[in-house]
Image (cartoon, rainbow, N blue to C red; front, side, top):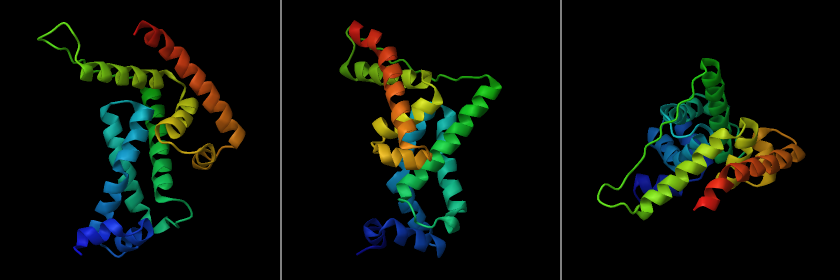
Length: 190
């Protein structure tokens, strides 16, 4: 079994132990395991912007610097998601202070035909949903991202956000209602 295959089969706790012993390939394996989940959380919170990439890198830098403090009381994915949410919320606050909202919207057009390609339609739908998420208040958006995008249970979302279960349920309902309000006009037009 090669070193890479061995790392692939190890638990998160085993990998963390190896990182603490100085084995960089173990940290690389942790990043590979969780980078797409963390990216989805951050993009859900911030949208597709340069800051999202910076926050994504900062999540793993922050975890690496605090790895000695990780006690393993929660799942590593949950722990990293919590860091991602906190850093995303910090970025949202920074953006509000600067009164600067950046929408990096890329429009793809089919130059050869007036008929849109299937990929373009899917891209536009995805972009529309992402823009709708950005219009929802942060306290509702974070619950929607964890429950709908990341697939955490209501109980897990409550633990990650350190909120009472009733608050999570309330914010989920209000967030879903707002998301539906924002998307219904577009869905009816399709």
